[in-house]
Length: 312
Image (cartoon, rainbow, N blue to C red; front, side, top):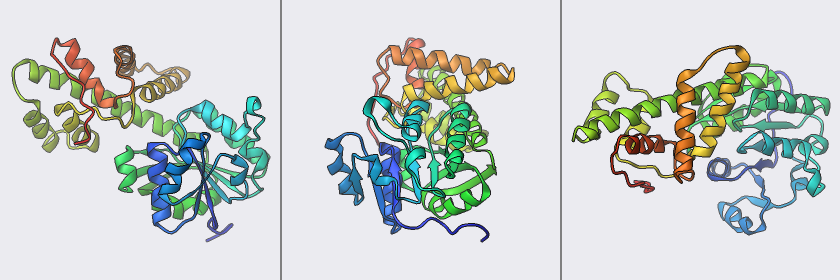
């Protein structure tokens, strides 16, 4: 392989929520050493139980050749890269050694990706955007689909790590922001599919029928994709157990609409989903999965719906 060797040694990990913790556990299971940064000291024991080394000092990650981030939004990633002035905390860009790589697996805007990649380049570091398609269950099962973009040499250095974390990596270009655009648009396709699944399930229930056979029929014939199969079943069973919670979906919807507006492309179906998400959050469903779009559709149809957060 041309260029520098794959990353070795301890891997830094920032953003150890449901997704990040599952991904870090897979790295550990594959024999990689991981040091995880966490802001709250009361979370250290949870992380150490996974087998990784935990720290509340981001400076402990600065000797790593590779640091992975899996964070919720633009601001969180910017804080990590540029540092937080209120905490007098230096960021990755100022502290990582030249040649180190920041593997950003967060779903963020293309503007943020451009800003972050430029800052890392200014310090002689690599930046690879690699957002994922999949929920925490898929992360635990190493079934994530990864969309990667960045300098080819940096992507190849990260390839062994990506192979541990997901079932397939799609490398789409050398510009990191392209990966984030693909991720945002893909999430919008999924969100509109969930909205439609919720609406048709409400029609079936309103006619006095069980939506499960209908969903099974549709996903076995005309709509056999993963989104329809996985989430259609959950909507039919009224299972809204947290995975991709509504506020984070709304964040992605807004980012996608901003990308579309900049390109001069209307996205009317996504605007409907945005309003439904706002409605769901206003009704107190902010901690539920995006399958709760089906709950909002059921309530708007006058159906009695009881939010279920079981994982069965």
